[in-house]
Amino acid sequence: MSETKTIVWYPTISIDDLWEGEMTDVEVEREVVLLVHLEGGKIVAYQGICPHQEQYLADGTFEGGVITCHAHLWQFEAETGEGINPKGCRLFRYEVKVEDGTIYVGVPEGTARRYNRCVAD
Image (tube, rainbow, N blue to C red; front, side, top):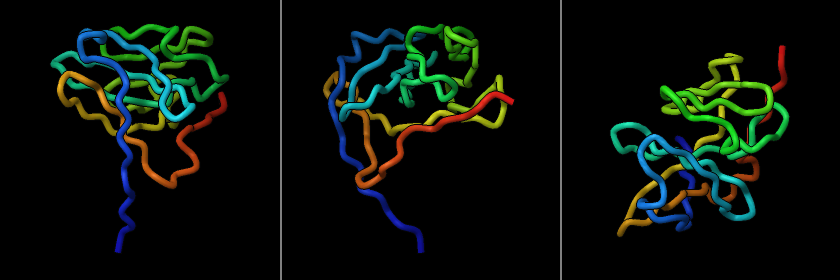
């Protein structure tokens, strides 16, 4: 039997403030969250801090479906949050929904850790 987590939804920004092909960071429950508007209209949300040396991912680039951290050029697949360089690392992913033109980020209630850390090989 799997445990079901309750999701608490927090409003962030207007969908009009995040164009397709862009990313930005927002604060949700005292945590930095990265919002990414993928080509085709889907919006995803990840931890906003690079799991390598805690740099803001929104200060990096988002090109060709890849999020690149500005500090040490770590890269993540924007669709899934999986590490490209290096592999084996992944970003914590939040649930997202859009209602009445507002982007909401879903935070799992009771989850203490919403942040992944990785070290360079």
